[in-house]
Image (cartoon, rainbow, N blue to C red):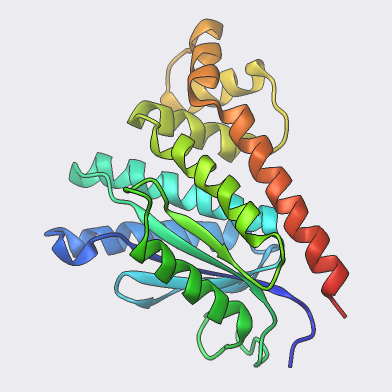
Length: 239
């Protein structure tokens, strides 16, 4: 049995069975997961793997990486589906923090591994499915951590901010998070990244307005603090 407390992620596509372009949506998701698995290979212990047509799972070694992976996949999925099929498709997430009953036998696929980390992730995503806070809640934590309810209350507020973004704001947030993660950044850095991404010059005023309107600095700082709180608990319980 693994003695280290792991972070398991389980995600699925909301209302996927009602979508006509299901095959194309799954192709988009597969492409995004492949990119993320490569980019975060140092943080992902067991690759994000599609286990059913509309569901995938994996193991990550840090809470901050887990949150950033969730944000990047979610935003890329929403923006790409809107661009390619004309409909914005959303994911829901369960984040489980706990040990594994079986070792990770194959890093390339997250199949055949089980234990409390996955049980908690399943509990969390089922809770989101049953109670999504009028469509405002897309992710939830589950673990034996005493402060889990408090942390989930912060995540609910983070989700309210994120779900209020327009498509252009989601594109902006994606560029910023892709460039800086949850670290501090300058307007000049984001201006350059946005210009490269959009293929055209972007003014300082436009960059400033977009940063302010998305509340991305506050959002990123909040994500980082929740991740640090989870890591403090993990370190105190690992043995």
